[in-house]
Length: 222
Length: 204
Image (cartoon, rainbow over all chains, first blue to last red):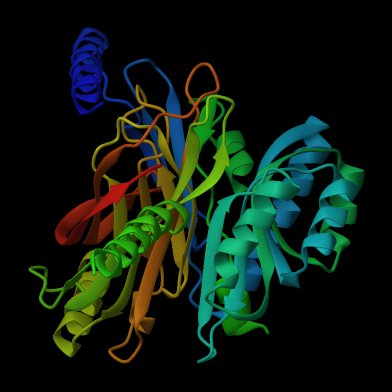
């Protein structure tokens, strides 16, 4: 078994090196082509690899309640403008909830807006009252249940779902309903706004998951 | 006279065989000093394997929990973490990595008690299936303190091969590292890192 694995590894590494040298690209990394801020607290980076694929990311780190609220309002109103301008869109989104949702509450919200979840963050509290955070695959009931089980051993009581990352097809009417839904604190489609902002120079950017804002909700709002 | 020895011996052997099969493979190691100024100076790292499923050929699907726990930071480590954050915008974190990465072990879930964690499950070598690395970065490093016993754990699943069968028994090492990283493209690129502990693992 061991020797076979070694052979597989050598073949795999050789293939990888040949492919890498041939194409001249290292997977997943690239040259930064644009970098900046959208609003006060969101920084973004875009890179291009030698296969001409763009990759991007946005990180949101508010320091005060005011910065947090300003950010959420800006993203929501700009996303609404974008939808009014461009019509229905498939949006990549990180949704931060207003409070801990149970599994049943989560799936009813997902079903209502036809969201396709990929991952979730869940929260619980240990015996000292410290915050425990779990994360992982949550694309259906089984995978989310597994995540909840995994986190449960370290917490007292039941964990709740605090955010999800996934995609959803949006028109402006659905969007109005979503941002009026008091279970949702932030529908963070900022990557769509960055992409729209840069569309004259850069198109088809593959964005990574934007971070959720629940820690700030707990610190500044709850 | 002989029976007195043989019976307990047989029972012991049966029990041992039974135990190693029914109960998990568990390997653990501790550290009491770390080379990085920002690293938890003590802690324990273990791997714990168990069977989740068995395929038609009688091969088992294994899950492995790799957990670094009881990690404590000294006050000088807290100072180092604060300075890196304030001066360089570096964020502290912990990494768990399958060093073999030929077996298709897939890091699927993570959890920790780090403040404001941002997690990443990464496949560093796309020519081999499975996410070999699990990472946590704390986006609120100023909240890390000397009194909390920190932990970070990842759950790996063994992936089935081409024809739906699981590989047989495999062994390797999992490594836990501590790092200071800067954000680039949503991934945290390591500025400094040090090994905390490396432990053995075994699948069914």
